[in-house]
Image 1 (cartoon, protein in one colour):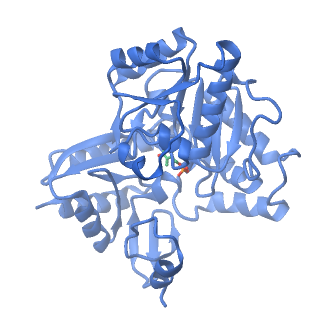
Image 2 (tube, protein in one colour):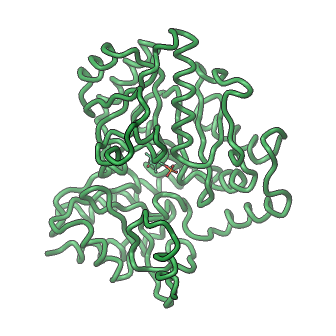
Length: 387
Ligand SMILES: *Cc1c(COP(=O)(O)O)cnc(C)c1O
């Protein structure tokens, strides 16, 4: 059997994979088993922040793996402590809990918010308000948090305690918060899986003000939008707000599994020894990778992300077969006249890997994708979107 047949036979069929087997990559180019090169406009769904096998990242993780690859969280290790310091100094948040994925980072965020509310207002203050069209992960509880019914249907009963508010409607959110004993409001500033839809500036500001006035924890899910993707370190920084809790994962460790839940002043000591944990969370190799990534998400890189973003907006706006361009930084959604899936299949046949998000073509290239590759990819995508 070839790889694709083997996979179909033995790997659970939860992914509608494209018929491409990737064997290697360097930067923003990846190669398939037949030796065909592709420009990668996906970076593993916003994961490989500096592309495939980036030299600095590779050196950092190899050096750490040669020292020690894992220790239990009952002992101290250097990469974990250093990464937590970096995250706090760069954001103004105060403490970090490390896990392995976005869903887990969000689970921790909800645990912290519920415990804080129980400590300050009482245990019945446990409702978490999230938004319709949101995505927060695949665990049963994060499915409940996710405001899209089609993720729920097959897996009831869901975890209670989540209600979904219409995005960009502050009055509706206030009504919901009054109707329930609310512990937290959780938002993505740019709804990624929901079709790459940024929330309105005024709305996000209003939500943050309302949450702070009522001592409701504001959780921002930066799993996809974080770590430089939006043109700032975290997407909330484009909105001038200060969350109480920030969750992130995907791009943080540049291609190794790592989740982080950043805790602000108010909730920094809410969790005590024994309240939460993770066997792999804070793994030294993953954290060493993240230190090497985070250290290079600087003003110069962010200016590059914003410039590349403007280039893409310019290239796609008004192009034949492209009806709308949404997103921020290097997180972009294209509403195409043709079905998004057909456009993506065409792009792949023509050597450009893209994704979909709902009815959109979704682009998530590496933050340092070279300008010439970006221009080439944009030409291919435009010609595939044409009728
Ligand atoms: C991908 C994603 C998640 C889930 O992350 P996993 O690492 O797959 O658990 C949660 N929230 C958002 C916004 C995401 O994009």
